Image (cartoon, rainbow, N blue to C red; front, top):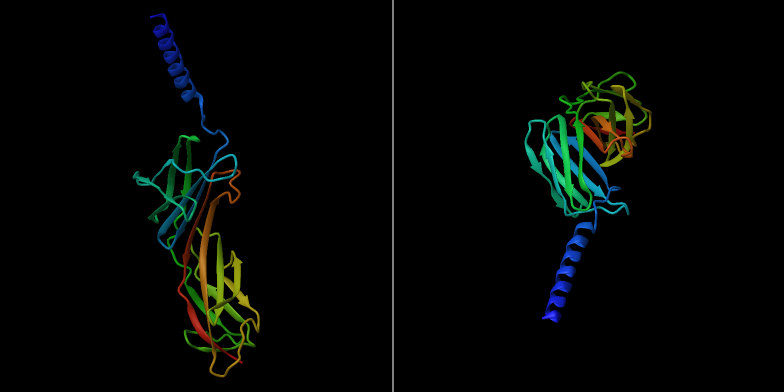
Length: 234
């Protein structure tokens, strides 16, 4: 009887010790960091949420959700390709509240403001050195500088002018203005038949911190014009 009582006492002591140990193991990682990248492009919002441990590796197994500006609660899905949690949402401007509930990191939350640009930076004119407007499929000499102008977009901070020839980018120019000059010989004219070229303008606005130091998020919003194509001759 004494032996049985001793065994029972040992079993109870072991179970209590196990319970206490399970309650103290793996406390939430207070050094875990939350990073949110939100990109609204032409009406669609792509949002990536990364939960980063103290060793710099992404943590999974969390429940991640976003409350939209309209009040809808949307769960994220884990994306192996992106090494984080991902949302694809309608491109609505406003503040999104992102919440991460993780056994490894506890609960982390942040607000992500997203600005929605409502207009397109439509290309208004491409003019050569003589002031002649270049329209779709017109020919322009490579020796002539070109003045490209486009519509201002309310709320935009900067514009990216992309110039391509034969499908390859030859110019990526960023400016806060609504016009830019392409110097003579920017484009190559190697044939009297002409080499295809095009211009396209993208307007953008940004909020947050690209380094994720002052803020846990970086949000961008862009809208783009259609391509205006023409032929470049010697």
